Image 1 (cartoon, one colour):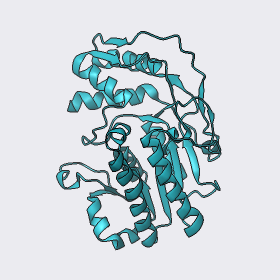
Image 2 (cartoon, one colour):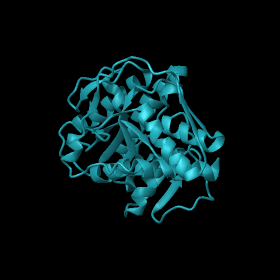
Image 3 (tube, helix red, strand yellow):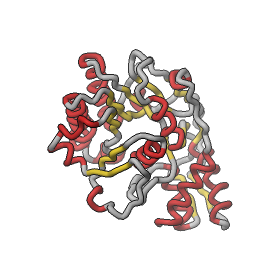
Image 4 (cartoon, one colour):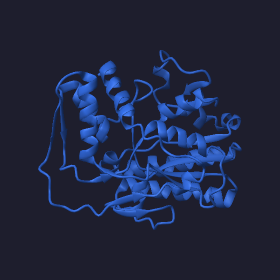
Length: 298
């Protein structure tokens, strides 16, 4: 996501410095005008360098699987490191800190209707640590006058902007990679779970809309499409696009469907819509960019 956001913002007139621990090994990348890459240690060791920036966008976090395997590391990365960057940004005079959280702070399983005023009941270490980090970000908004925002993201997907991403356990990425590499897509469940899938292009557009906005008193925005489909429906979407792009038969399998009844899932994006933003929801195009990424780099 960081790569796609950085590239999008630079191409839309912003000057962007992307912090990456791989910065020293990426001199070969062709970057858009206005974008540069730096190692985070440069700013951690000399935080005064941050004072030239207007906005700090924080996406760094341990993923959901590693949060379970390494719970202490999850607290360090997702909470402590977030607070450290938040405070460095504040001390450097940055007026806005935008934090990407997760819709999973609302609870588990996600079912029913959620808007930004819904109670949060995080139970997974990934959600718990994100909610704690949210509280720090919002405390600096309330107590220190920063125009901070928390974005509760649903399930984003799409092709990476640069060949440095490594988040292949996500459903869409995993199925696209498998289709390219083996010609087989295996869903490791019955596929009945509901998800709100949002294209990365829509995430980028929403963030560009949110920059410098200060009209939501709580500072919290849900970000998704407002519509949920099953994992199996997404898998069949990928299957159709994969056979068209790869020009071969792709095998699609899943575990036997259960008789579980879905109770429905709506994550409201009405607050985002008040900003005159709505998702384009170009699912097939985003699946295609993901498949083409694996065709090029797999």
